[in-house]
Length: 306
Image (cartoon, rainbow, N blue to C red; front, side):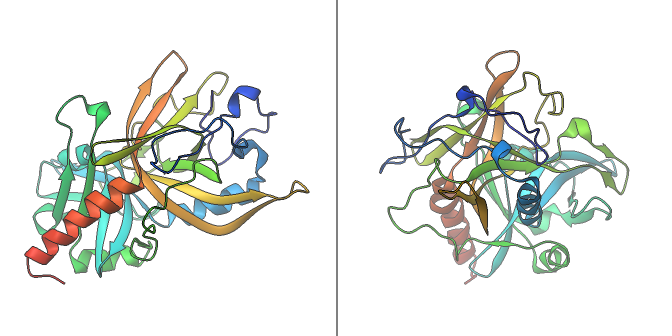
């Protein structure tokens, strides 16, 4: 069974059961048992893991609803850009928690929250008709220019146009490192205008990739046995980006990172399958590009945008 590890993993020898073998076939719906094992985070130098975290964190913002003037931690969002517009990519249920006229983002641990009026954004939502874990659970929220300008002073927006997959191109789940980023709610504290949290990048291995209807889904495994450094729950990471870092190991055994990360999905649900083990359900890249982005662009075009 694979395990989710933070950006500062321990350096135990990897167990045989950690070496889950994964890939997607031409349909993006299957796992191939005959490919080489993925590279585990315990096999990557700490300095490289920290560099990956810093890269991914530049696109990431904890999301708060504002309830009776007090912000309440709701989940995580990824700052993305497409067709000249700026958006927040998250889970639909994170957005549905907004009840008042505002929500807020935390751009960094030592900065005041940035409030955004909810009636000035345009939300494109995909919500489940049945059990929540089956999805879809996805939201793409278009930001007003004045708010995105404030965010850009601190954060970067991941350009979806530049990284759109080619037709027929599928994610390679057997390559690089895979993980989700955020600040577990149980490890954070929040005041009226500021948040004290410690964001972490949790690496894991893809256990399953499949397509159901118009959406694709990716499941990350976690194993908490003997891992007191991991949170009891990943609450607070709903809406977090699913990232792939281009890590490779040479024939000599040296590990290198290209400096690139790819946004490959959105986390939306966690499920324990035993006392210590379970899965984090995510949407995959097709859900972002072929569903959320296409509908948001169509809505913008219908409203008279470019």
